[in-house]
Image 1 (spheres, rainbow, N blue to C red):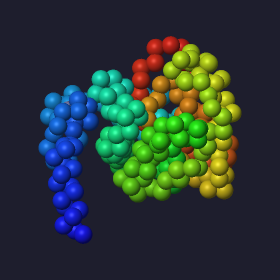
Image 2: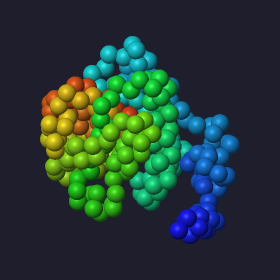
Image 3: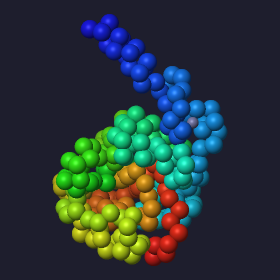
Length: 234
Ligand SMILES: [Zn+2]
């Protein structure tokens, strides 16, 4: 059995060599980036993306942390995960998100549970997976905090956020999410996981739902944050 697994792995690597997360060039071993992209990562500073203060000084009700600016390579990586179902990209992004959390919290994570931002079940069925769930589950393993993958549910389908203005985005999502198991959320410090943060409409709506269900705190972590140029009114 062992031998057969090794054989499969051997052929797997021939046909599917490891690729750079950003430029998708084949790379050696289990590296995340090629040497060029390793140097050119569009990293955001390790501060709350709302108040731009470090963890100790941030007093935001819902702090938001991210790893990358959503541009070039980071966009390629998120697209690979989201639109072509590249679960290796998801694993690598989760690994980088975990690294950001270690950097921010120095191993003392103020979280009891990890919760992904959910998709509507019809959308998840159409896509075949939920990228936020992939990230949340992989992150859970990386930082050893349990994940409740179905803690939140999307109770109605909504228009695509990217087609809307900032204010329309908030309105579009109002009442779209609910907590499935309030007893598992009450009193818990939640790390809410999503792939991309744009205006924050999705993150704040879901964070609000968790807080109203009794979560003692909600912190958001995303792989990448866009530079939203409109007035987001937040
Ligand atoms: Zn590269």
